[in-house]
Image 1: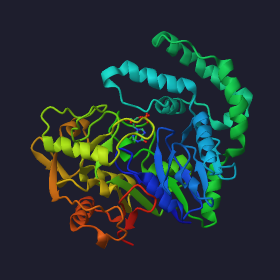
Image 2: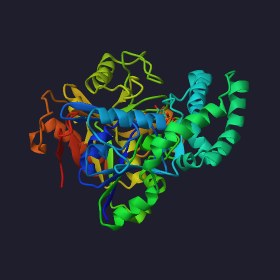
Image 3: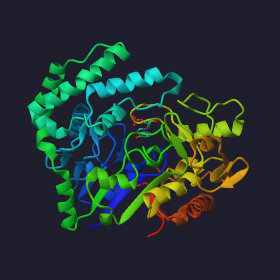
Image 4: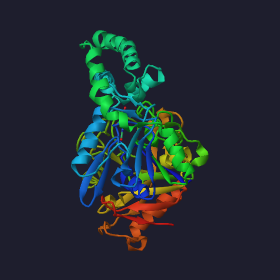
Length: 446
Ligand code: IMP
């Protein structure tokens, strides 16, 4: 019963899709365990780009059943749009291939509206959310006024829950935000009509499906969205998402105990990016504006050139939001923390090719806070805001590494970067991405 969790170790956008896809090939089931359509996985297959937000990456393999677990929040409209887009490209995702947990929660229009309005009201203090209603949907779940997928199958219950929650949400919309109230009849018609009819054949007891697969000895992959530093409990709160992307979240969000998990693959970019606001010790200034980005004043020309190089060569723009991401050097201090939080058994490093052409590659191995060097992140976030990175500087390389298939084909400088990452983080780097294509990677260790 091999079970693997694949988790992002930084602030998301590590290129997890590529390695999820690689591991998924060996499995029969891929399960998303948290988040919603705030995620954006890009897969490049035979030169064609697929952008997935809700549907697990394994969907491109006919032999894989993809599961949206109980820990996910689902906007049916987004799910259908994704199914339609895949269908137009000849990827058939019928009810036998996509299962959706009856106990997953719905994202409703008031969640999206409140997400947008709250961000607008926060002004300079906004979190930079994806405005997809993720936070408000999870808040309702925790407050026990959420509406679940299974409620779509019982119109009376759906309507009773909707009336209860909408009464209060409409007060907030009208009185706090000066908006028009939402109409319960219109919402109920839409959700209980076409949405319920189309979703019904996909709705299942996914906990049972996962356990049956594990009991048959099949390989199940639990696919995390977002990443460790965006975790509600362990990330840079409040600049986090509202779910638990860490490996432990897979147990809750899919309904399995930790004893089933025998491999935890962490995915890290060879540098770091983040979207939205929040602390980022190794951040580089760029010549453009990004939400919460570093002030250019005082940054050296070399720093801005390195930041621009990472954003431009790495195409660091949001899959959904198209926002320019904030770039920075690889941070082994935060990675060590991610190794612990997720019990990582190995690390997959993506986008090593992006560093090609930089004169120097920097890796942060410690922080200096108030004159004291530390190798683990400070628990107090004010200290993280003030942390000065301590870097190891390594020489860069110019050669194009995008067709390397063996570690020995990499320039010595690129190998040195991987060795330094491995040593600084205390975990084996087993896989390395050298380009966007499905096949552009190499195995570093067995
Ligand atoms: P939310 O998840 O939309 O509530 O956004 C909360 C924070 O998480 C914001 O800083 C987002 O930019 C960030 N975030 C959410 N999903 C992703 C993702 O898939 N990649 C990177 N950042 C994300």
